[in-house]
Length: 387
Image (cartoon, rainbow, N blue to C red; front, side, top):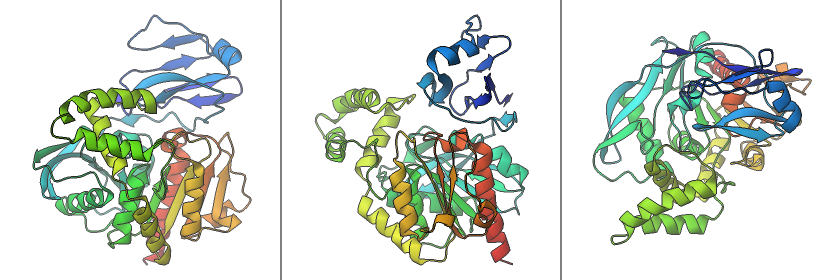
């Protein structure tokens, strides 16, 4: 099933609403000319986009499954009106960490093409990459989008040994790739919480030729982990023999209210709490330091207005992997325009960084074309170096 790439026209700028199957089945369209707001859930609702902008200085954006108003977000140029496919999911059985999983995943593109594997954050799924996938496919890449256990698209068939640690997540991805007969990855793309698993995987194996960290590396606790000690306590209580069941019913809803995350099932929040409580932040930093000593091409992407992961983490990660010169980092302003004069030279660098002024946590949805171009530049650099 194909859904249109819906977008909003407002005075002097075009604002994106990334609300496809990635977040919601609702189709959102705002037209400045007809002054209509339509949704398949409420097709009779009407709203003037111009007056909305004048009155509140807001745009409509999506946050997980809910459409929300976000104030003063001078966001996001619309680069195309490309259609996005609801990609067919494949299912394979993976044995990993002593457990057996039925893993739903996307695998599209030519079998002999360069392989780009994208790892989602938590709580999330393969749908987080719905907007960039068409660009990657258009460049003749093979795109693989696996799903981690705990968030709906990867079911545990047998066992309970999987512990949501970075080591287990890295082992899971390694076993998954072996199961589908992928021995080498051209570009490993990780978003948010998957950064700790990616650094673990890349530091202790040679399975990938390059890696991209988006909106998270895991070298120290981020904004969403407001109280690490409290999160560890809650995780332990949910595993307690006597009160564990009751805690698993109450805690997810409290956590949703406190964190702002929107999840469709309480079990996803339980998985998130366990995962964040078990991150070894020091070890993740050490893994990144190991990567800094390798010759592996690395790109780190941070966003100044990210409400979940502060951009200082991306900057520190760049310093660790020796992206420490001014011309190693591209800067994009609030409208998605590059302010660097040397952006063509940036394409040739094996270690590079990108900082966006605006775009939020899901930067790949705010600037799908820019993010795709950056990933493809790295893919082409790897291909050139391997000749």
